Image 1 (spheres, rainbow, N blue to C red):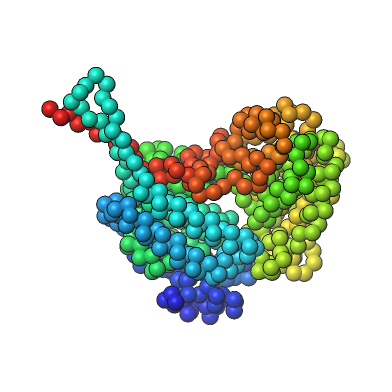
Image 2: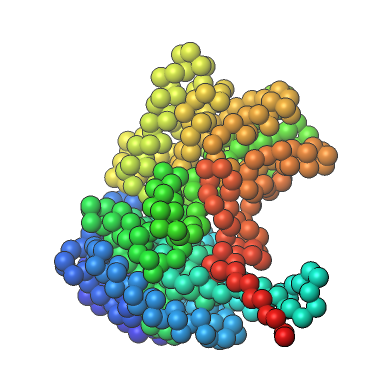
Length: 514
């Protein structure tokens, strides 16, 4: 049993919080090897989006604590980089094991602060554990090379990889655990140290897995610093600016909106820092007439409505060939009608709450704008499309699963990332039209194609301007494959065989033997 850290916090939480109390620090962040409060004594609340009740309060850390964390990370990294790959792997595997052993508590914690269903929370934990185990093994496969010198017999040329140093990591609320393991796990495996700023809406999972890293996995002091910050002027944005400007931070890793990512990129580039950015998406889900329509509908439901549509790789635009459009729509509406909306703690819930009221308003705005324009455009909502007014949904951040039909590429819900359970369905007539519609976006993260024509599958996939493509599958992500996008969807790749190289510098060594 883990050491009990939060007797006082459990007294102020709902009864169910007892299931995660042993892994959640006592309302503190983790800086320089210590659980600490903010120097200002300020805190900010974390809410359960299913009912908008306060779960607890966490420290509103400032730039002062951030500088302390950076210096601690710098000191720790100099030693960690000298630790053998096998020993680093042992620590990271122990972290993965601790997360797996505490998956029940972590799943409830994720659902409480994020709202996603318990099944989605368990899936996130499994993904996070798999990433850590992958990186632990990749730490032992960081090979260099000896390159023959052209025209010179007494020279040896060596390519060597070494850790970049301290890494600043900023993670989102939609995957509050796995986005940390995917970034911090790779950085630590590569020999770097981490200053982590988790999302303001869902930082509790970050604190919990930090506790598991330092107490169960015995991660050395200073290698992982977790700073919670509010949206106040001296909070999240100010801390992000410090990470970009401090010369001891050599790389910024960020998952979030394109607007914030571009701001961080601008700040980091001024100071000569590398970035690893996973930003917004506007994924097309293309269904050709040769596809198995039932399979395509199941894939669309899985991609669009997982985590209530709040993933960067969610199907955002459903593009269906005209001759099967009506069949697809009818099956999609029937499938959506079967999905229960409710608390993520209820086992039969498929649509949980959105993260906060702003997200609800955004989803509502898209639909309302579409309804207003439907007099001219002819689009309409076949199911969903309005805010729930009945108890208990009107007390939480809920928006129902919505299917919009007869949409076109000029509508806001097609042009922009929705990040909610709204599925706009457009029709196309030719393959050329489909590729034009699919690529008609500034984003390029994920795309999905359903077809049983092998030639078409290859031809279409190669023309898509997206970093990841799911062929007859709603899945585009796994630890052993690179994750990332093109265009406004980011820079660099997470996961895969080259993931650790994102956190390493390449050094060339030339050696004259005489």
